[in-house]
Image (cartoon, rainbow, N blue to C red; front, side, top):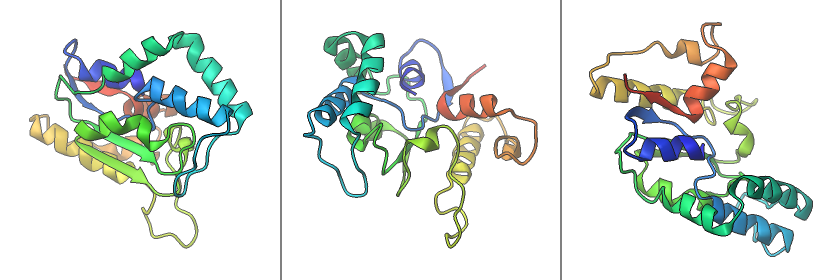
Length: 191
């Protein structure tokens, strides 16, 4: 998620759109949250708990094995303060995500074309769309129709025509799970 956002936001390559799902958009803000979980000072927000000290330690160690320093994490997060490439971006987040709390994505929310926050949804939505539960209205938590509308709108604005999104919704085998995840979490490169 972070690297797709960083690549799309910089003027290195041109992308048609970016659809990050639960991205760690500011690694240092997430590290601070994890440290607060470890010291048991993290405050749960409405509808969202916090990690246990053990889980937060494991996640923080993994994150530090890549970023190595607070300075590197801060610089990475600040790179996303602006969308310098003006790439249309659909940010999808879970309101109950204890892995990437809402404040970790505040900078991206400020410039994203559209932000969808799914109430009651956690970090698991980044690996597969939630399914409608019994008693829920159709599509209450499903974000695939939102993705379809977003991609169709962007393609039409770019003069690229319509796209058959049924391949991405699991209705057939034209698109593998890996391909779906790449589209949802990364970007479409403008060719």
